[in-house]
Image (cartoon, rainbow, N blue to C red; front, side, top):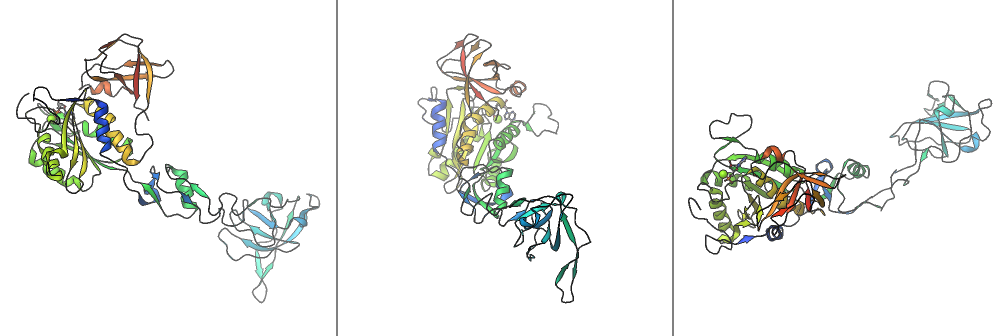
Length: 445
Ligand code: AMP
Ligand code: MG
């Protein structure tokens, strides 16, 4: 161990042989510390992609009234029984009904009303003849008599019989008042939001997206777009982790490149606590001399929870991603924080294994974990004893095979970007010949 003491390695025996935790133990502890966020009422478009937290019932019928599905003439069917192209039925046009009209003419025997798509079917009418089934009407519209009452100045010739109900969209034919139109748990996409709008809902109760603050630590970090300079590297973790949080369903905020200075880190955390349901950090959790993250989080957890037990650092039986920290920081119940190792591959795999399930749990999603499939490895694999290894791979579903991508190094971001899955090698396995069946965690949604 280099540098200063290890501030709180939970469950440590002697400093030389701290307890190692399994991936499953750590995941169980992390998930036990979080719960679905309480539902909130959102405007429809703010709820896109969210899961409904209520059964939605329609207050009214849809359509709310009988209306025309065509531009044409609303009429009585008896008037068209003998209509042909040669001997059309000639009807007097008694009105003109636009979509949105509230004042409707009454259609009597021998009469018709010009009607537009979506306009209410007037009293007396039993069907709509589309314009194409007529001569299109004569004259230019309506005149008024001396008393201001409408007088038909137009006739329409109907060229064929029109059946009862033709081209009428009946009230309630889509949705009946009282129907459950969407069930709790439904993810709201464009058509579900449209349905909510159609039944008149302005807001809806949903499981909110967790607000996740992603913060990368390291005095060596330079933001992309700026020249790195000697000894410096570009901060990639904050981008990977923020994008991964968004993909998991969170609203993610990226805070890149906090230097390894305890005061600065404390100040940034203070700033971020207010907008976070979850904080994810990268870097500073191993045993290096400048790993201030451990120091700062141990303090925070301790203050918030009345003791150092509020935040713990562990070593896991996994590769990569051995050092992990988690707990709650800040006042009151605190905000859950997962402190991931800084190596880019370790940070990403740790996110997939621990942070993504936390976000999915907060969302109340049924699919908390990534799908795992069995596949035959196309290459021989090696793995350290006592560690569950996660190798980057490419999965071929047609062949049922998986091929390792790149090497084992946890700095290999080039290979990581070509991978679409993680190949798992169990703790007790140190070597697997090509063709062996392995568990494969699929990273594609
Ligand atoms: P640490 O866990 O802070 O000791 O970092 C381990 C390794 O990961 C070092 O080589 C760091 O330079 C690298 N690293 C840490 N944070 C980042 C980051 N945000 N982006 C890219 N590499 C990082
Ligand atoms: Mg560091």
